[in-house]
Length: 450
Image 1 (tube, rainbow, N blue to C red):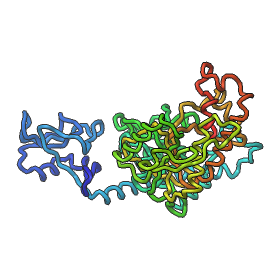
Image 2 (image 1 turned 180 degrees about the horizontal axis):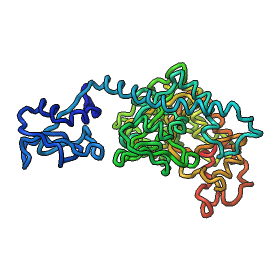
Image 3 (image 1 turned 90 degrees about the vertical axis):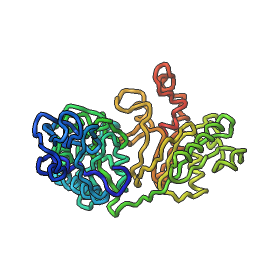
Image 4 (image 1 turned 180 degrees about the vertical axis):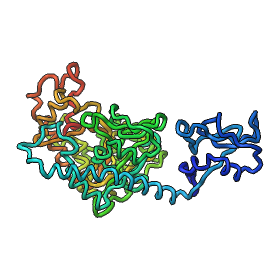
């Protein structure tokens, strides 16, 4: 079950929970016990103990389904193996088409209802737009017909970002609302015995093997499913999407981070590049140095030098340098990698990051603030500075974005940050006073500008 060509096929473990199958594999066994014993490491034949020489079947396979990873210190198991490539594709295709069959009627019904509904008088208020409004059913049904989405099951504790990257696509969060039904989840996880629709969380919808339940997110507006979220006890149902013309993103990566010329950043920079190499992170890494010229680290550290203080009237606000340096790097170095990873200098890699994102579908870490409450300070700021917006997302590093998206966003990022900072004399006290709110807009304006 490691990295070889052959892997355990868990789908056959229930089929060999049979005396005839086990006797065929272990003809030396003198008897087969059909009851009294159960466990995830059964069926097996015992080599020691009171039942030595016996075959023990799993008496409670529904409650304790056999797993590939389980083992017994006193017995030997009968294993079913399949070629990794064949198993992965066959299993994935079966899951995909079962889910397609479950969601297709739902999309058709929604599309018909949307076509008959009168056009709204005005767009929804910021924070009030639902997934159904943002992604019309007719458009999603067309993506389904065009084969622009693949439904796949994750392993226990695996986020959808990793699930989709493994099969070469990007995670498409727009589909979480579509598969957030008992029908879709039971189609993906036919081994489940029930459906719980009273739970909620950003790591749902999912399946919990320990209880045999599929879990529907009961509060999808407040706790929108995230591609990056996961729980150690559940398996997620993921939608892996790409443009109708097929996947466009290559597995090419470039990591960037922004610093100023100071000794303060030196140890962070050296540690960053050391662990980038140690973790075997794919692609290249570049330090974006906002300074009047090269410094003493330019030789050993790959560096792009960008002019500092891009907003002279507010030169003391250093976070301007991040979007400005990114713009200068894109325009002058002209990187060719498709996936750009934006981090901060105090971040450290501990393992490779190989997430695929297509144009229009960047992903990022969730910020320390939230837009869940329409009366909180973050939403007050968003309503003032994101005019015409229907949805906002609180993001922080790492930001993983397609290079062509970043080319479009970086100038607006800088402009919006400058606009927010220019009006700081008119902010309510609680926007910047950290004793009244943790937001501290005086420093976090760049985060809201993005």
